[in-house]
Length: 459
Image (cartoon, rainbow, N blue to C red; front, side, top):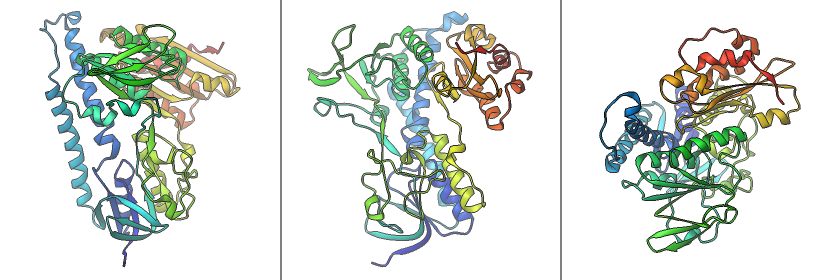
């Protein structure tokens, strides 16, 4: 079969793929972009955009319930889930269509719809249509993992995608997994009116975070009525009438939770198992993650992997930065590396957690002499005035070099204020730069200089 010839083939239209395809086409190259389902990948379709839209509805419900605290008279509050679902679906559809319209107008770019399989290091089959190029770029993303737990295939379960498709409110949502996805959904559905229980195998929710942050997040959720069961060492499932029995086996509390709906939020797996990587000789690890070097090149010359499928970042912003790295190196003569990227992410509970750089545990493990500064949000005017004083600020620095090592802001607008620290870290600025800065009152970021001024040696 004669193959259609391109200069470049980009497989996957997530956060990295479309921008890379358009940039390559703009450089005069003949490019094919292959997508088997929806443009926009996880972020637009089942991740950031729909979940944050859902969270926004839940926030309105919560603030309406609290109206009397602000001197506002409001009536009984309930969620019209069909209307909530319709709003989410409309915003997702708009984002998807805007991306499709933009791509359709890119000169030199051919859009190919279908499931791509590699048949060689430079060849791709899409539903019987053969494509060939000197360079391939893989941006195939990841999906929710189905954990290998007893009984999990014997009961109906939901993942982040199918939960978003619900247009009814679960009576009792059991969330299995206390990570970012689980916590965001748990709070949102609780605020919308569902009973919610989180079941976490480990000793704390958001296991990668420092214990003080994990405990503060737990208190915030429990204060809103979310039940949290940690140390769930023996999770298993079985049908129980019209509900699902989730065996917990915790040291405290009932041994089982009975949910009308069960969300599995226990990690993700890359979409590489049906990509034909073996035919091209592309190396993966045991989870199916594509192995890449610091410049995102795979084990096969001429093939790169971007986004969640390469295991070098699980966020929209890291996927987009993957595009920037590859494009700059190939088209601008740059030498950018993924290891130049600083860790930065947010947990979009309410209040949110914004994080940049090292955790306290990582700073301790580094062996450096570390300074730490903290400030509760109860002492941040903006938080008090908005009636949202939960959380705290924590910053870390090297006592000798004065290098800023990391920061966490758990509190109102923490996901925005964290960038004041992140940008200084990229600039390599010392503690004194922010400690002497004059920030605007009344904001959350205004307290950052004070927190850095008051740092003390880490005990």
